Image (cartoon, rainbow, N blue to C red):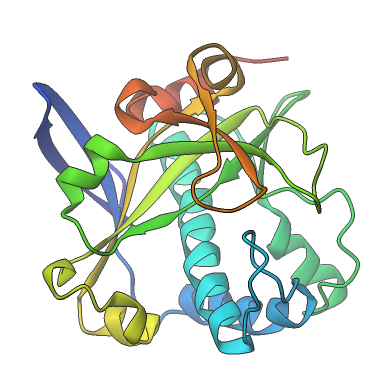
Length: 248
């Protein structure tokens, strides 16, 4: 048994043993093609302004969408495979997949938007996936320094509600000493094995609320609730809390 689409990595960080599940990404797969199609469609319905209010070109939006979409699609796959491996019945639904199936690739009717929904019996849990890239530092340094990112508020989203769970995907750029990540096409980096996608852990609402803190993350007027990756759940703790306990 085991997770067929992920491999396990172990790290020693700040006297802690830390595990990640690394996604095995096949750029020629239907899975990856679908993520690309969704990203291409979605850029026409997402704001031209970034969180820090700067203008974003379609190409910049596409690069952001495919990174976020791939992390989210792999997060759904990880939850599904972990549930299957542990003989747990859970329906795992990704919002973009539902929208693609029901409206074609039209993202202008975003209502009740979420990232991932996990349904077990009568209990529904919402999972948020917010990824980033260790583009100019090593993965171990990023694991020690980075946060799991929760709810945020801004002028455009003044009242975003808390989700039940926050999973933490983190891309590792293997040529990080060159500090040139943003000069490259993301797909090319994946094809050339210069990028790895790690699932590093996460948090639930209570952990984020009780042990998290607020910061702007350099995004102007946007305020995030965050918790250090190493202060949150390990990836196994996250998946067990998500799937083994019925949160209401």
